[in-house]
Image 1 (cartoon, rainbow, N blue to C red):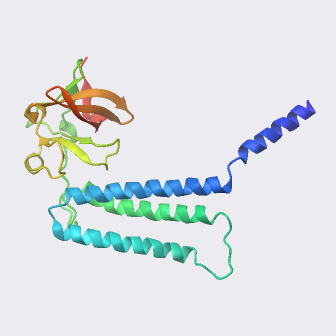
Image 2: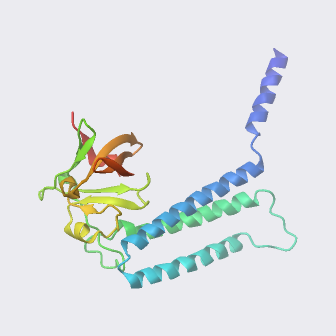
Image 3: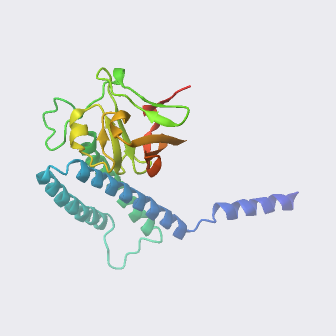
Length: 242
């Protein structure tokens, strides 16, 4: 019994410490790269949504370049290269985590241009005003038993349904169904498959429900019953017909 206990303890010790510092460093670096990827998605979304405001776009590009310089300078300030000083094998992990935190802060800053400013905000500057939906009168799209998706515009209700390229609201917007005239007429998000008031206005295109994945539903865009593409839409915008 004593030997069995010793053996189990040894196995647990090996399991707990099987991850090397190199593995931990790599995990931290992967986390930073994931944050950096999200930052790029947010940045590209802003570029797309504000493309007509060329002065702002030029300033945004300049700001992002300067921020990268600032980020690198912050890292050097945090971990100076002292002559002869050795931070140890954890240094790559520490650097990656610090870069991740700085990147997440930048993401939160840039998100303001996507979220939009509240109506009446005096200091919104270049941030567009929100086009808000009335939460008490939001209309949902319907998913029929044959998996077809229908949405009929009604001036007494509000709706805005976006088809994203990925399961990420900061990924490229591919198609838009909106009650707002300026969004339908101007296609401000430069959606590849257009902007429409409802599914009736999509011409020979239609939408088909495929599956539910986390907070999204996967939807096929069809044209003449042939698949054009797949997109992801927030599932809370839909209702299944029984």
